[in-house]
Length: 270
Image (spheres, rainbow, N blue to C red):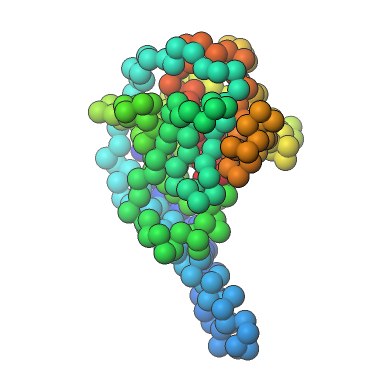
């Protein structure tokens, strides 16, 4: 099994390549501005700015990962044994369109149970609409804090590039898990891996966006439905991007499962 250092170095190379490609797209639109009429200048300027900002962000993140990979220790055991005592049967994990840099797990009444907030130095409000052109997929890297109440439980890193991967850090301990995404037999499969053990798996149709979330023993814990609007709270969640979560096991929900659901959310929506 590859080490954390090898994974991070691979992510660094992938992000450098992705950033370079985006910067080339920016250069194409900048050069094409010389040959087009005035009516097309604004569109080209918007696209060149979007590709440029995204490209430099991904390239910088990849370079930093490649250089810092040697400083990472290998996977450590997750000693976060706390659980959420009980959840409502139906909840919603998502974000408002104007707040793409965070996500929250709500009950149908709008009460927050958990949230992630983005930590990034590349966060200039003026540039958000341009960078948001790429926010619906895995191209852009991001770092989040996962909070339950006032307590930070995990730090979550989502690496950018054409292949998505996320890492879960336990404070003061290091990387305790990573996530992967693959297509198998026409289905999309997300995995939450602790070392070489698959702790959680979400499997479903990527077009429909319905995923069954199971543990390592095959027990069904939840069904997540992308952008499904709950009838009982349609007004509250109709303007949000995210997942309707229907819990099959509501009691003693591990924090690691919440980290997994938030990582899936960031890959598809944030």
